[in-house]
Length: 130
Image 1 (cartoon, rainbow, N blue to C red):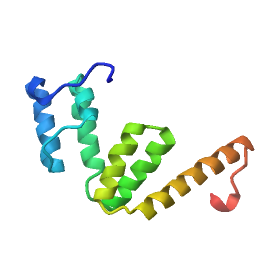
Image 2 (image 1 turned 120 degrees about the vertical axis):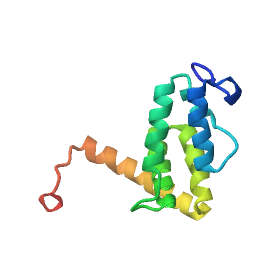
Image 3 (image 1 turned 180 degrees about the vertical axis):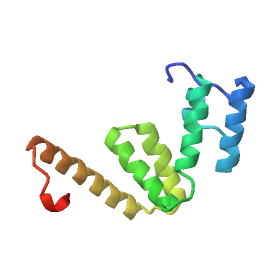
Image 4 (image 1 turned 90 degrees about the horizontal axis):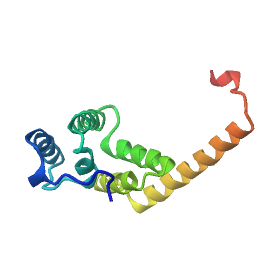
């Protein structure tokens, strides 16, 4: 259960409904997920976070699938079950296959392992990498 509860659309203030409406229009959906409903307990955080997500995840030099797969990778590393579920669904919608997901998890697992090894051994960065 969310620490402060979830703000449903019908119970939301006009300020929160404005953000909810933008989320639904932008994502072409008819519902608000629990992440946004939890953030709605603090409307400035809701608005700021939605604005940032909308800007960062918008079309740019990276395509939607790449952005979503990066989001999944970071979410796995940070162990955020909610974000893993949400962005895996978005990545699948953008074209991620089971094989792509499996390979992504292999890369994430290997990167985490070698990162810990390099940190533990306190390996100095090679001059050629600089």
